[in-house]
Length: 391
Image (cartoon, rainbow, N blue to C red; front, side, top):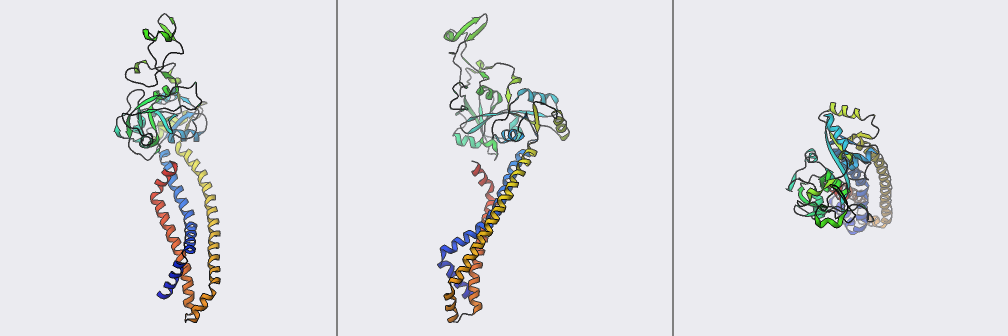
């Protein structure tokens, strides 16, 4: 028996290229459907975990999916804007905690998330270094954002214009970094967090400028009407909020009318959640969505596509498997003289058949073992793979 196995091993080792190709083909046939299923399951768990941890989201009428993705993952296009009054209305009901969200701007590729301090407690985010934002204009970075921007406490980050050709747009705001969050393995790691009022300053709804009542600002005065001083276009606006100029920053208009992309709503119990959702059933301008339901609907669509992908992979795999057996069959035909030689030197038909069968079994076993190893590695390091693909 050992002699026949040795002969099979030597044949496979001599024809190493053909053997490697066959083993790789068998490995892919087995691994692709299984590995794809593992990756999809892990991706689904990651997506739904954050959605299930977010009870409700209120926003303007529009796409629930777009609203959910922007609020939870800071991705997708900016949804239709609601107003800060929406957050105040939730607070006034005493049914839930309201956390304002304004996710529109970026620092390079990192999203700027305008929110309140309650957001950090809600998500369980802790500081790795520095402190929390305390005054207008300060920023706290997620762990990956800090790494990509090369910034930490004491450094500064600058908001990016929404368009290269946004000549009439707002000035980029230079923001001091006061803290960096611990790694949380979530979308929060990618974000630059600021107070929602700082996001309004970036949009140009609030600004600070030189004191027009001072003599050195006379060139910027258009006219004076009693105690009212009207500036002209030459008035210098500050692009950084510092202790020296923070008192000059102000907002024009009613803050309740200022924009938000969403309001994260955290009710204390199911009864409060149901009552709150009932209030928005007939709302004309606002909608309340359950992120878990939205993500489940999205995943149902993805899983439907996945079934077709797996079916295609299985079909291709079967075709590849048939090709591999065709290779074995042709190889056996080409080795006819080799078998005759083995018969002439005293090999029995059973021994020769064992040699040939051992070669096929060895290739199949090697392919299946490698596929199992790849599946284990995918199961073990799937989260790392998914994060790398997303990054």
